[in-house]
Length: 329
Image (cartoon, rainbow, N blue to C red; front, side, top):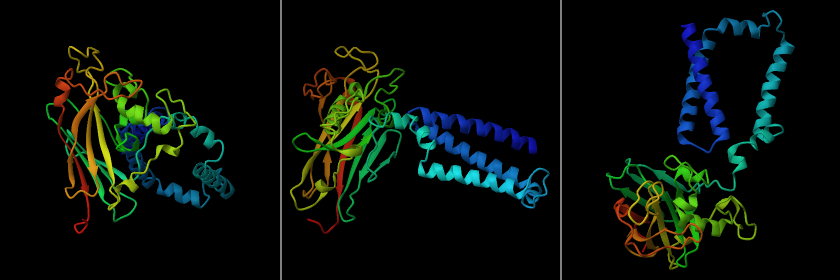
């Protein structure tokens, strides 16, 4: 049993170490995180088993009966361990320097994180649910349901955001993980820019953050710290609030006669719905509005959809729902 624990501990620790390095040096990956957390659990269980078999040894340690080990030495070891933990907690040097070398620290300008008020769900392999609550517990809850046809091989890259009726982005609610942590993610075996995959969203994101597709920051236009934009005031009743909910999707490797790039294929598609907060009906359908072909630099929506073929068949039902209190009119 001892050998099983030792070998298992070695394997689990090697996995924990390698995934820790990957999490430090590479863009965030839920798969890496999942393996890292599970490996940590396995290490914890095996260490507990190991310690359980060494109770007598630790009793002798605490009693200072081990040759070459004294209470002062034990105190120094415990103090050093506690000191390292404290330095890590407060970000003292050299811990802060080390963390500044991580991928996230070196690419903080291009990393997108949605508001803590946004939750995500995956009811099925071909469905996504995005829910935006408000700081005020009495405010309405905005829910977006994205159902893709089961014939679609995997779910396309997706961005969901709200913008004003004049076209200014208010808040990005959701961005696919691959695109959220890297400006040039691996997209079907090759690196492509976010401004190529979801150009409409990327252009509007640049306009409100001042962070361009090269990661360069324009201090003049990038006035909002941490890429946070508040939808809350637009979700208040009785003020005639209206905004546009936008969904941009794109699937790789779907070329046709007009769009021949074997990797990019047909351009991204934009679906929109006007959300009237005071309207009696809580539902609104997101309808196909245009595409992002040629929008890499300027983000202009193209409304002529004749060149789009199979890409139109990806969406099954895109629906927005504004949950409200029963007595609110």
